[in-house]
Length: 472
Image 1 (tube, rainbow, N blue to C red):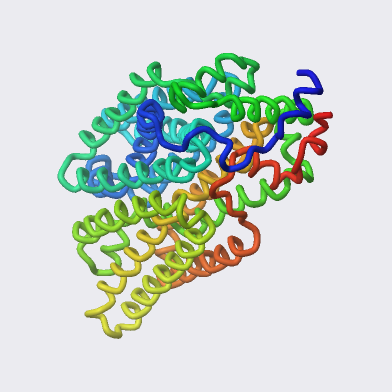
Image 2: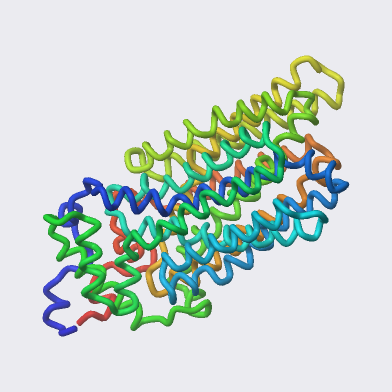
């Protein structure tokens, strides 16, 4: 690329320069295909709660064995996370999604036809591998195909579909055998697998691998036939070329001072999201309600009723109120929910107001679930997909996704043992972590609403203009 062209084209476009932010039909359909993977993610998380009693009875598993089944998925997800960035970078976003769905289909079938515990574990591990890849590639792919004014809401659909997958699995699982529930889990996997050939590849990935003409034609297809994409395409090309020249796409390249804030924000949000207790509550919701003396079926249905509209509200507000306000409200709500649940178990243990403690436990879990769905569930993934430049996006995504699943495994495996130790203490620990999340967001997390990916990445990584990028 010649120097004159680089100098005459601003690296970072103004708000009005980007192509129209009205979503095209192909953009909507492409996003829907991508979030089939998010539904798979949610159904896998939701499976262990309604299936618990049936699996334990049919295969004679004790609490420790079932805890292994519930948590081994996160071990598989860690494996998937390790390869997710490299797979998505070298083979493309669509190939990565297709490979993940093959893992999930094999895993669900192994669970459905298992006769012994080992086959359960193998199946759950395979589903986890697929989830580890999906949890990275779906939000990244959506962020890379959308405009800056639509990116937050469209990427947040990832969390909405996770929530829908959890909720629908809870509802269906209340009436169906655990084996049939596992077979049903293959259907959304097949739906995405068969649809991937009909959607375009990410234009930013195409630019990364040097397919400039195809990148621009794909961008044109996504933005609409009559949209002017020349400035956006040039911006993507300049930014991609410069970052690739500056740093190699590797784990070693990720741990540089210029990426410190991006890494701290991305990994920090994910760690706090998980240590706030979400997977313990989602995986074992039924047992929480039983421990509190409340009907597990009523409690589960109430969770479903709260989750979906709150997640949908978060999608709507994402590009209106911004990421930070939603995160602050969400973290505050999860903190309050854990305090209420802790108080419920304290009253039950001390034999005070025992007639109110089950209702208080339900209210606490619902406040937590609704608040988490509003922001903490989806926004960390949105921000993760926005803050890392293309040259380290694969390694950074793999690292952050690995950290997510490592923390998830710790929480999901330890949760039953923590509840045996002290239900009150468990939720107090979660509430204190949620409280710290409020401080973390207030001090460190930037607002990314209404900014292009290149603008966000340049500001976070201490790069503000073409001179800093050595374009001259």
